[in-house]
Image (cartoon, rainbow, N blue to C red):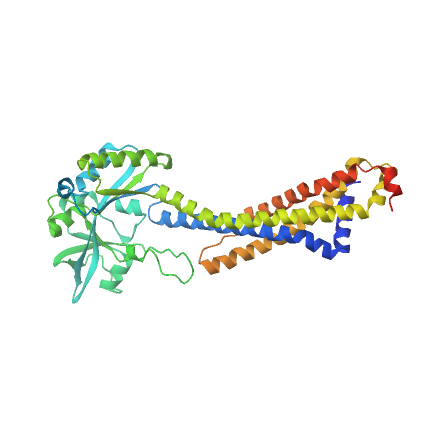
Length: 410
């Protein structure tokens, strides 16, 4: 029998036995639907996490922060530690390989005034590397330069919200903004940063738009007067993803040595954090995948039982075909094509069900869901595999049937 004839016979059988076909495909539909939904949610979650990280530096960014002592009794060595300093950042830049940028930052909240409007606002002392580290570039004017750092210049760059807060619709470039009663000339306004995990959520990057930025050296000389030049944290950009772990080990060893064996800092590795997040999500994914696999197995067993029942009904038909010259491979192909055809129908329906599952779970759990061509591939491959595996035994039984015994069967 030709393949086309087997497909036509299979379609006729599906149309003739609608309820039987429904029972055969039900398990495949639910199984494929679960697998597609899990895949869609997992892919969407990973893409969203990577997209968010890309907005604030990417996965090759590491962060070194001060860690206060948690012990009840703090040793004298820890009390003597100055914490993270600008000199630590310079040592990291000079001694650790594979680094693209090192950006120490001092954070403070200071009174900021323009005209009669006065408000306490976040002010950051940063280096020129800040814009590259955070992918945060000026929409108007310029960012801070090495010349500003060297001269401790009284210049400031504003986030979009900070600019509108103090200047409204007025162009702030060239205007004088008073930070703690010290005049700073506004030389740039940064592009607006926005990122929303779900529709209707708040902008999770709004904190960046509220910031004001001045040279790190000006922060020390004009405000804090900190002769030890302490910093709030240090941003580190690694040149390539494959160098992250080596650089992380080198940074930790360097700071530990410089701080006299006191671990009063913490290194936040984004690549490790992303990996841990994916591991936590696997529990959720495995639950749905297990349910999908169970449904596929149950559906496969139903398919095999119904195919065996169909074989019993068609014993005489098989015997007549063999007596007329049909080969065992022709008989096996007929049963396998029918099995694969039925499960393929279940796979197509399961794809639609899986997309519905993904969207429903996305709404319930406030997690994104992305429909990808990979879902269609999963549904087709899975359904064909189920049809092939569970249809194999009935096909072999039919192929091995003795035509003489088949013709005598009543």
